Length: 109
Length: 118
Image (cartoon, rainbow over all chains, first blue to last red; front, side, top):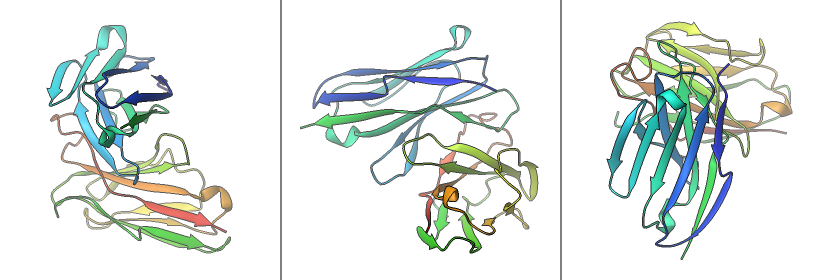
């Protein structure tokens, strides 16, 4: 099956700092999503981004499908950005989304 | 509804007890998914429904796990004779897409049910 690797596993930032989270995957995928799981366990869909670049406020994401990686950028981090960020991928016409192990982000005031 | 609703939010079961977890997806969403998330890990796929049809149950860990979606809306995940290793958060997600990402909609997750087997 598809392997999904996320790095770094843990990240501690001071409020206001920028960060880049990475997701590598082992096969060509047609579906890739980034999620944020808040400290209460709720998974929030941040981006559906199988290729290209998208931006939403302080967050942006880029997926280079041919090189099998995606990056999530967080700028001017806030304490509310804390939580675990997951990358999930799936093959075309396949609903078995595979999640990485996540990056645990802690933003300190 | 406005979001995916799961109940109960927390469930404590004695080993050997049967449990039923409910998921109420967003109205009109075709696809429904169940995931299991162990502590400190990413969610793992259990099963997928397209309307009332269970098209993929390859992730169900044993025959003690059973899921249904009889009318193509609400779904129930049932675990028989619970074991301690079943302790996890069970997440439900729904999507407007028949296949994830087909229309660019992605998943919407519920808040999950935290199951603790004692």
